[in-house]
Length: 358
Ligand SMILES: Cc1ncc(COP(=O)(O)O)c(C=O)c1O
Image (cartoon, rainbow, N blue to C red; front, top):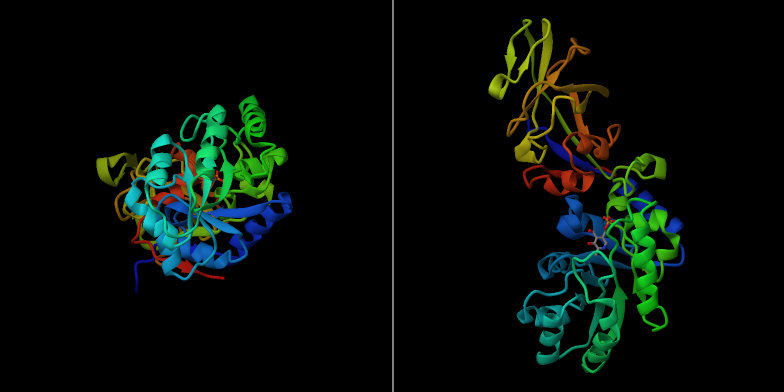
């Protein structure tokens, strides 16, 4: 029998979430964000499933080429552009659209002979202060790009810093700054990530860029994904590989951090930090065994976790375990480890088979 830790991928859920994007932003085209291997789901699986997306967004040429190698022909945006001029031949060859966010990239474009047409995005920094030209540089940057013969299309984007909090005034300020600079240029514009799609309809503009909401993660702080009609695209499952009866006071696992408070049943499930289940997950973290919530008993190990099965003394080897996904929101689990569902998904390691189920 194969090791039972696996990520079940639900194409119907991914498509449902994509439809939620379409419904919320009916006038915008959709650039599905599939960087970091589709937030851990498998970028090729995501892109094939979301064949109806208008474009895909990735973080590097390597990520883009993985899509092209799989036969994905849709437009692909490099959200950070290129890092070295020697990437430009591949970019034009494969018709990738880099974001241009700094003077150095602009100069590389101006000094490299491009033998095929290129579409670019100008990235403006409207307040996140991560990547992008200052808004007042926009006119000069677009004039320099227009002067490059091979550039056939220029679009403009920016990124929100705080859109996950609908009460944060910084988002309105970013939107206004963006429109002030890029509003009347006739160029296609893009601003909204998942939080922008859900909470900031004015930010939908020409292109939206959903990431986490496609995967069923919560885009807004304090609002469960389910309340926004999003469904988990991934369920991380395993099963019990040992079940023990221990005496009151018996220690469990590394460091003997957990001592049985009673005579009790403890289950061992085959999943651990070697799979991407965070080692820092505290004992209060919920796990489903046979569809019922239990909690951890002691430290997460590389390949295994121990579970407090006081409520399931009848549990047995082979019983199903869910770490997050269907029936157990990834955001709730992530919260116990002080993180967000994005990180849980992205940290799932290569040894966990991704199994499309629908
Ligand atoms: C430039 C850009 N656009 C869109 C996204 C998608 O964001 P989210 O996953 O919050 O929807 C990201 C993700 O970090 C991003 O960096």
